[in-house]
Amino acid sequence: KGAIGEALAFHGAVRFGSSILTMWQTLLTPVDLYCERTGPGLWAEPANALSNLAFIAAGLWGVRQVRRYRTGTFAEVQAWWVVA
Image (cartoon, rainbow, N blue to C red; front, side):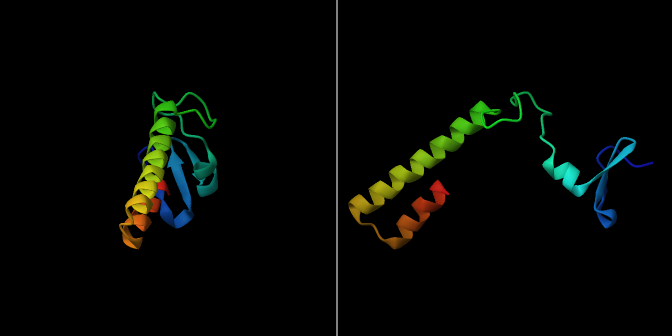
């Protein structure tokens, strides 16, 4: 008998307790196994959403600074990577 969450890679399924879930059932099921998640919606993880917005803001600020000081293409690409 396998452990909980044991992967059955050759079948494309995961054994979870006594049931077997297909890969698509597993990938499309919302995860709510930790304390921050409040539901399946966009703001279900408020701290994560806010930190993601902070990275976007920092990247856009970086793009602005790179263009302002004309530091070059490489620096601008890096700033856009932070946004992405």
